[in-house]
Structures are given as structure tokens and as C-alpha cells.
Amino acid sequence: MMEQVKAPRRRGIFAGLRHSARALLSGAACAAALVALPGAASSETLGQALADAYRNSGLLEQNRLLLKATDEDAAGALAALRPVLAWSANASSDYNDATGVTTNGLGAGLSVSYTLFDFGKGQLGLDIAKETVLVTRQQLLAIEQQVLLRAVTAYMEVRRALQTVQLRRANVRLLSEEMRAAKDRFEVGEVTRTDVSQAEAALAGARSGLTAAQGALIQAQLEYEAAVGHKPGDLAPPARLGRVPGQVSEAVNIGLQTHPSMNAARRQVTVAELRMRQADLQVAPDIDLSASVSISRNVDNDFTTNNRSIGLGASGPIYSGGAIASARRQAVLNRDAQLANLRVVSTDVTQNVGNAFSGVQIARAASVAGEEQVRAAEVAFEGVREEANLGSRTTLDVLTQEQALLDARVDYLSSQVDEVLSRYSLLSTMGLLTAENLGLNVEIYDPAAYYNMVKDAPAGISAQGRKLDSVLRRIGKE
Image (cartoon, rainbow, N blue to C red; front, side):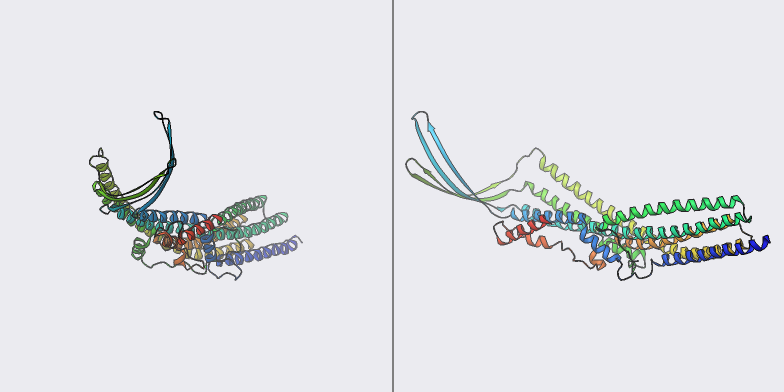
């Protein structure tokens, strides 16, 4: 009679566990497939997240304003080449102690000054300002890449964390079934208290892992909000991976040609060379033209005096205590430092591209191996279960294989996420991770727009000057 009672109970227990295991396997497969399959129409795509990060980034806005401020340096350098017109006015009262007479007067005047010839020093200043604008534009592109790469990382990390939570939650459900089955078998004398304790320990560990995964998900969501500008919704899998070259040499060549750090370093060498030429001209004289007209009136007797003057002058240093020679040496050293910096940046870009390209290959290989590992672990898990039904495997064997399967799924999930991240990291090291290159559905910021408005150094009272004031007021309100 005892055998007749035990047999049905045992079949019912393992039948329920087999059903739970199949559900877990199916759910894990669906979770893994989320990385590769298109998302639902209502889901937020990676492209939308990148566009939002581009629009909402305070760091980008800050550096765009810094670029505008640098544009104004070019306007100021151009203004230094133009004549300067100034006015003056005065009122005076003079008392003579000897005569006891007080004389009251009024005066006004206009003056103009203009550097006729400075041997190119002013033009070099303008050229330096223009090159500095180009340097700042490249630095803005580098910031844009940082913002977009951070958004990609935040997007994929939320997906990684969410799917890890799903896997661990399913694992907790399965281990709960394991523990209940172990208790039922213990009650009928099929297993010992040790088997029950092993199942309880495994369930406690799974719950701890689930709690940790939920905490990681909260952190990933907070990072997403900081990087993109809003809380994450239903994030769709990437519809397409970042397109990368097939050969590392091709990727390196692209990086050396297009990376903003390389372009900025080249421009900085040009600026240093211009400053060196400017330092050479500090000993050259300036030839200035000046003219003035003034009128003064004695209020007491209405006597009026008109004065007019025009002058041509030349000036230049004879001895400056060694300051000019020091400035010349400093300019040469700065030029050499920028050349060295260009070599350093070139080496860094080459190394970073090579590392990123290798990372893509490693991540892809890990993803392929991870898929095979999950398949094999699933087969092994089912086999151990069936052997446990026949009594040739212990509860510990089943729990160990269950943990191995969970680890394989988590590793596979991470390898898929890492493959996406590695591709976008490679694009970043090549200088191609920009809104324009990615074709984001967003209005691309034009770094030359403000420069074109101020490059002629319009006066504040001109129509262009008033337009610029209106632009600045709008920026301040934003």
C-alpha cells in the first residue's frame, strides 16, 4: 500500500517541476531574443533615446554657448583692425587766487585713431581667433560623442538589468517549486533533510540575487534619466547594430582622419605656429593715424575756440627687459608641445581604435559561444531532471545544474549587450558617433550659424547687432 501511495505523488511532483522548467526555458529564450528582434511600435527605440539625449543634454548646451563665446573672439579680433572713433565732453571751473577771477568753460571733441600698418600683427590675431573657433568646434564634437555614447550605454544597461531581473525572478519561481518538491518527497521518505536544506539554501541565494538585480535596475534607470533626459519606458532592442569596418587598418585610418581629438590637435598646432609668427613681429613698429576735432567755450565771455589736428606716428620697442625674447622662446616651446601632443593623440586614437575593434570581435565571439553554452546547459538541465526522476541524481545535482543554466543565460544576455556597446564604442573611437553620422531624427546643431552672424563684428546699433541681442535674450530665457 505504501508503494501505491508514493508512486503517484512522485510522478505528480516531477511532472509539475518539468512544466515549471519548460516555462523557465521558454521565458529565458524569449528574454535573450529581445536583443535581436525588432521592438513593438510603442516601444522607445535606441535612435529615439539618442535623439532625446542630443536635445536634452545640458553639457552640449554649455559647450555650444562656449563656442559662441569663442566666435565673439573672432569678431573682437576683426574689430581691432578697424578705426576707433571716440567722443569726449567736459565742463570746468577755474579760480585764480592772484586775480580772484573764476573762469567757467565747456568743451567737446571727437577723435579717431587707426593703425595703418602693423606688419601683419593684427591679421595674425584674427587668424588665431578663427583657428581657435575651429578647435572649439572639434571639442564640441568630442562632447557630442561622449553624450551619445553615454546614452547608448545607459539604454543597453537598462535592458541588461531588466532582463537579468526577469531571469532571476523566473529562477526564484523554479527554485520555489524545487523546495516544495523536496519537502513533499521528504514527507514520504524519498529524500533526507539535507536535500530540503540544499533546496532552501538555493532559494535563499536566488532571492538575494534577485534583490541585487532589482537594485542594479534602479541604478540603471537613474543613469538613463541623467543621460537621456527622461525616465526609461519600454525600451525596444536595437533594430540595427552600429556599422563598423571589416578591417582594423580601415578603422584606424578613419579614426586618424575624422576623430575630433585629432582634428583639434591639428588645429592647435596651427594656432601655435601663428602665435610663434606673431611673437616674431613684436619688434616690428606700428604706424598709426590719428585725427581729432574739439570745441571749447568760455561761458563768462562767450569766447569759443575750435581745434583740429591730424597726425601720423610710428612706434616700436627698443628694449623691453628681455620680455620680447622670452615671449618668442615661449611661443616656440608651445609650438613644439602641440606637435608632441599631436603625436600623443595620434597614438591614443590608434590604440583606442585597435582596442575597440578587438572588443567587437571578442564580444561577437562571446555572444556566439554564449548561445551554444545556453543550448548545452538547457539539454544538460533537462537530462539531470530526468535522471533525478529515476533516482540516479540527487537534489544537489539538480540545483547545481539549474545554477549553471542560470549563469549561462545571464552571461549570454551580457554578451549580447556587450556586442552592441562594443560596436558603438568603436564608432566613437573612429569619430563617427555623431547625430549627423547616425542619421538621428533631430535638428542638427549648426556650429557655424552664430559665427556667420558675428564674423563681420556688427555694431550694437546696427540691424545685425539688434538681431544678435534678440538671439541672446532668447538663449537667456531658455
